[in-house]
Length: 317
Image (cartoon, rainbow, N blue to C red; front, side, top):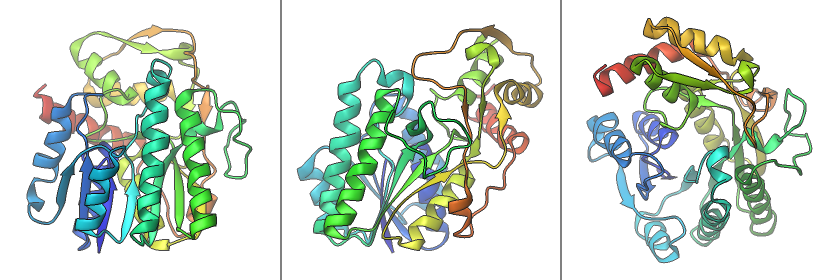
């Protein structure tokens, strides 16, 4: 089976591609290799992380907003299903350029939904976000009201859920949105906390700890994200949204302590107030996805150790 993965050179996209190839599927990786972070990391995910799979995937370089380019991918590669992960990511950066976030995340997604209807896609699985819950009281459930996002990024993710629901309702396109909760692991994004903390700890520099460390998250290892995404991809649900997160609430300070243990170094913590658009706690109720037989399995001691080992090798520290 051919599966189109947008954001295919990204953190989660490349991991999904590897898992699909290991079970015999052919991923079509679409990515624009933008400079949101160092594009070389994206190139290395293709060349090194997926290096042993040459000839088993297709790589298309372009932008999801480019209607001519994306239609050519659908027409020539003929994917049967879609995993849509391409997006402008991150709450804090969305505060700086909300127009770009709306353009990529909402219009880009709508373009893909439209083409999925035209080319008979059998299942459209897309990335939403835990940030959609705003200032709701955790644990967050899919039945919670999510009409009051507190960042442009979260608002765009809410908009993509609404658009997907509309396409499912009108055009009978099967869609499922996955609300990701704080994903981490090897080959991760440099703008994310684990990456930044590890980098600064190795360099002997301060790490910025927001809300004076009084924060907690369902940290979710990338392999668990991948297994959940493929579970939903295979389920072919008519229209749904689901939380996908770890099953333990971990404090930010415990997360940092685990990085210290794995690096063998003590972090220089710079305690800071809460940042605009951020929330104290994001904890998921994952019963809905568990109902499909999925279960997260990786604890932070194992996941962070794997990341630190990868970081040491990749950056030679």
